[in-house]
Image 1 (cartoon, rainbow, N blue to C red):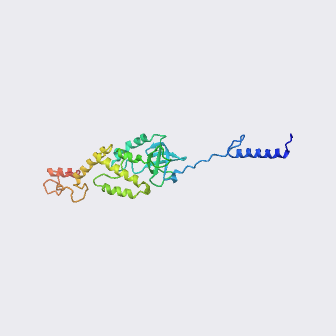
Image 2 (image 1 turned 90 degrees about the vertical axis):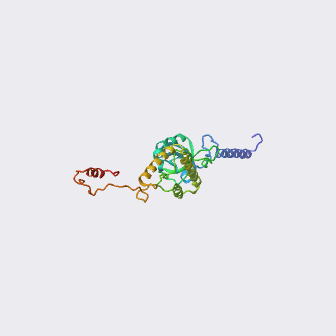
Image 3 (image 1 turned 45 degrees about the vertical axis):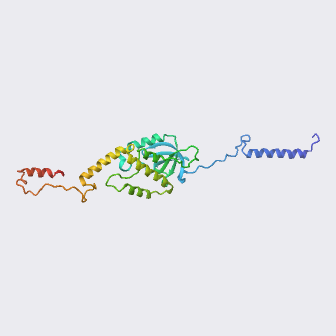
Length: 269
């Protein structure tokens, strides 16, 4: 024993054993034993968040397919599409333009514009991811919704024809349907961009306005300044007399008879 007391060696061994046990329990692999799992921050469920980051997986005619927190769902661009008066001009190119702006694999931030539906497309404001911003925080720049409208590739879903309600009234009605108050500032930016694009005939709006103006002029020709049939400003037309007072009109012997038969089939006589 070299002069050392046996009970001191026993205490030293116990202390050494306890230190080894503590080291293993605090994360050391300990000769094949699993360590304590690292602490991770839970990822918020996009369906219960106001805004979230997502990865674009596909752009289709039904919307933007994204993946976030192990969920896959489809986003619609709120109030920015090919509906309204310009659907003919915008429908074909809008999907291609969105696919160009949002290639597969790109990261976006989405702000819900309505209560999300897990298995159905849901409306949102979509933004390019901003470097340095916390994940899911809405960037300060323009939404993709606003960009598409500003460049004349999308419009608000309103009717621009002369017989429709005033644009301001339609916009006010559309604003009352918004159920997420946080998106009202974003919607107002869309309204401003839409007005400027229409006034300046930006992008595809030029072709749309040309067609709408042509249709409105035709309505004025047919139905007067208000463009509506059955109102007091309709042009007066003198229609031919079909009573048969002129000789030969009933038996086809005179010219009036031939004209009557022709005009029964044509409104413009």
